[in-house]
Image (cartoon, rainbow, N blue to C red; front, side, top):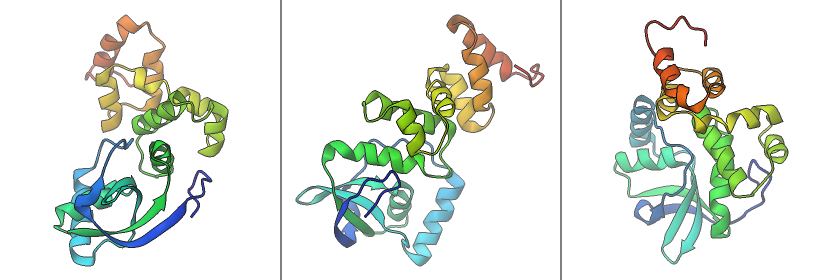
Length: 197
């Protein structure tokens, strides 16, 4: 089995796995859209889980989720006891790296989640900025600018996650001295703001 980042993993099992044996840790995704989660839950309630989740075996009766947290959450909500899964052989130290790369290839990954995933991979020494840019098919400039976004004030981060501000606004906020950023965020979110930072 080949992951999107080029890693080759050995599949050791494909079939149903009890949900209670699956551990979720270290996902870059923190925000789940309530409406789309309800739709997915209803779909799973009527049709089951059509795409298996990806798991790593970490003990006799335990697994760690690599990809598919939305499906897993929806399956739990729908009352399923087990879920279709593909189980791969992977060192536990590599699981988080694989999760991050899988998340980075999702279309609906928000800019802050993406920035945190980039930053985490770089801080763990798993890759360089040019190497990471190549693996995720982005420019070096894009990755370099992206990893700055988590340095924004929390209010700005939440505003970007909600779509009230764009990553470009965030980069403009980062250009001012740290002590003035909170005030600029307040202004950018106020009715007085004319749309240009």
